[in-house]
Length: 210
Length: 227
Image (tube, rainbow over all chains, first blue to last red; front, side, top):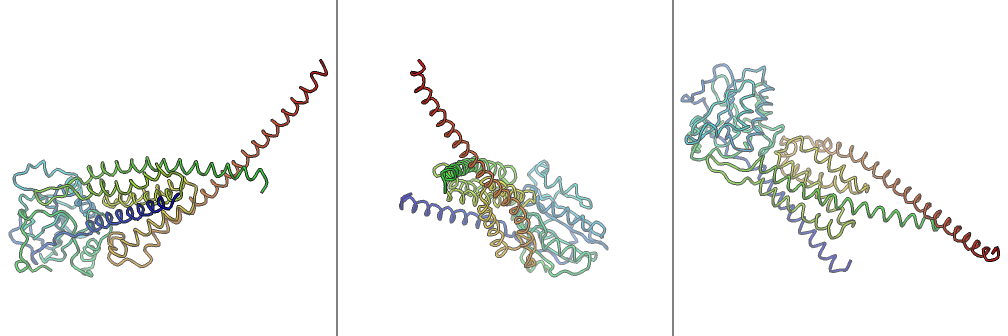
């Protein structure tokens, strides 16, 4: 092999490594890019069509039916509900649907999986009205209200975007329900935006948060 | 070094080279197949990212087409134009492990997709060159290390994993590597033994042919006197 051939190969190899490195960096950045956190009311919203928690925990997840990341969120919700099956937790999945779209639009695998989770009630949330009341902005957002209707936790259940697995969100919810305490009361949420026109982000002053 | 072992060495080198070329070509086909599979996977698993009513092509689709194409391109070119060289093997092996990382991303970190890492290590063993397993392991470890340092939650699921957590992941890879490295060493020994046997056969054949030629010569010298 001549010197010039070797030079071409080394340059090509370095360029290839750089290009692949940049590609994976972009992919990783996207994976860990959290969605907008919920601006959740500190008390259960009285206007909610879900009955207010009375002595039991209410756990609500908002889902965009077509968000690919929501498959992981729903899978983790399944795991979470299995862990909490002996605890006093009622679970709800709000499937956000624009009014002009048909009901068929919501019949995705994520929604069907959510319907199969024991202890979970799925509700179609037309134009995200209910999600808006809870300040949710991202698919996969989970809100936990305690038996007195106080916000106990707001966050997501996946470790990053669309990836199932053990996560701070799951650990904190389990700890809160089982022991009443956790190292934090929020976690990052990873998922598609529910849509600014569907659930407009509220100014921080309108919701006290945690 | 006597004549037999010299010939055995030549035969051994030829067989090893042929094996490398064959494995390079197999990986070239595998790279293209994996690229097509990645695109199909992205189309079916995560075609669109949504924002309310608005949808756009999902970044995974771009990753499958461009990053996947990038991962496959260089090793395929090397396998076609420079098969059997050390550089080709190293690039092919690194690429194969990068495919594992990409598939894990594209399938949303499914635990089942992590089996691709172990399958790929087994493919790498086709070369029967155990140091290539180190290259493969370094690529996997590098990916885990970088992500573990920058985004620990993306690897371990928790923000502050125990310092020894990576050992649990690495331990399974090392476990498979030990078995594969042993089989590589044995495979090479068998190839060497085959080369020695072939060299012996060739020498035997040459010696028999020489004997036959000598006999014919004697016979041809005897025939006129008999006549």
